[in-house]
Image (cartoon, rainbow, N blue to C red; front, side, top):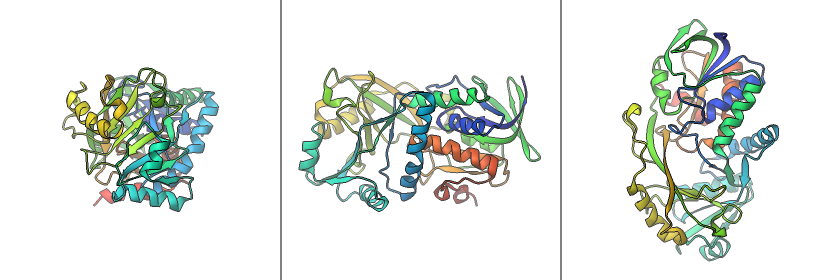
Length: 381
């Protein structure tokens, strides 16, 4: 096996798999390294689905979504299968909520199709939900979900078809600079790359420390829950939108969810969780407290599922930056390194675009997409 590559990608989750795909698409010799099995459940990329949407509280994310939808369509055409399922989506919460109002403003400014509904009309349109009298509801018809695990595996599949080398269960032991290239030591040997892309999720901080940079990346332990719906059609993807409840003033966090599909159960989760101090000691056993808190929310806003049994719960790791914006940029001291990190529990929908951006940063020194909000300089003294 060869040990020298044009580019080495660390981490084969959503961002790393996409980066490997776009690098190999451009003819680069690529090595994709994953410390666990492919599509593993210890990070943040595994699962049935992730929300994709235009509606965001920052215009930069609306712009990034405009870049991402066509790339997902192109990818699924290349794979010959469906990755994006359109359901429509709703944001709802108190009309005075700052994040909700910022989302409405950004969507209006972008000229994206949307409707702003009062509670009574929203109740008629979406009978699964209950909206308080002081709520407003933003409906965006293009929202939906991506088939998460299938998207990750699809990027890897196409990267391999274009010549990429993929090594699972291969942990990185050390990273060393070699002039304008890098050496990556693993238990399987040392590999050399002209470029290095770090997309290791919750493990990115400790890997990047070896390159002389300390980033404020905080892993969070978050619990995903899937409630059994039986054969009730109104909770299935064909009849129900994806949703985000801007209720952090009323409940522990913002709550979001995805309708049942393909046997998944109805997804509901808090957007956040407690910080993790030691990644080697993460408790991956779901707990009842999170479900109990969610049932309070369901009782108030999705009452038909308030008593539904939990079909499945699973732990997912967020990696959050202090401002909850991404890092998609070149290393400030070593230009041969590109960094994709801190996706804060809302990055999956952009992952194919972020992979493209990282490939461009690595190979060209800059990306054609707007990454002003994601510059690393905001965390570097």
